Image 1 (tube, one colour):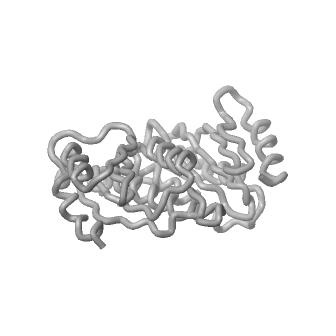
Image 2: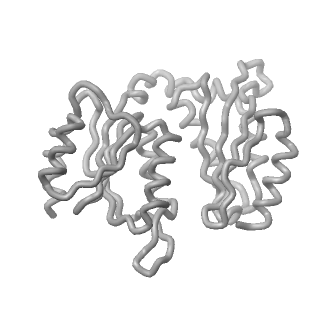
Length: 261
């Protein structure tokens, strides 16, 4: 990780020094830094209601040459509103020069009228955006299992998704949750170095495919998945049984042609 990133984290801990404001969650030479900043945003100088928001910044080893990954959560905002804020922060980060930017991003957000920015059309479509979906993804390979599976479990928790990782002849991920968060899970798979290639070099999951997706109400029977569980299977009959156990037989029939290719 860069000296600039380490220095920035030290500065951030001094700026956000009140109890519960700043936390260094991860420090790794391989994976970089993860910091959490809890702040109050939303006034914007216009008398709007202020909200407590938790911001998670993932600073990759190449940061600040590449912008950070960002997650947003708040007990006062819906998942779609948090997603909207996150996208605005990512857009803002992409527009900044490649230099330490976390403090600048937090200050920028604190000057934005969050309650106004995240409503309007977004709030009108709240029911549609909060609808639970099921998606089935296929992966090309998992060589570094501990790292790869650990990332999948962490992302599912952070994005409030549940699912199954099915390991066998085909590698499948079944996800259930808000559609926006499933899309974010897929984005992370294709942009973060999650595995190693045949030469042992870190690589991204560029071969990931979304085999099918559907609203939860039309893709399964009663009940939904709990947690994120890894399941090993040896045969096609065991794979069929796994989908039956999840009440996802209809989705399994839809992806069968893809699995036989």
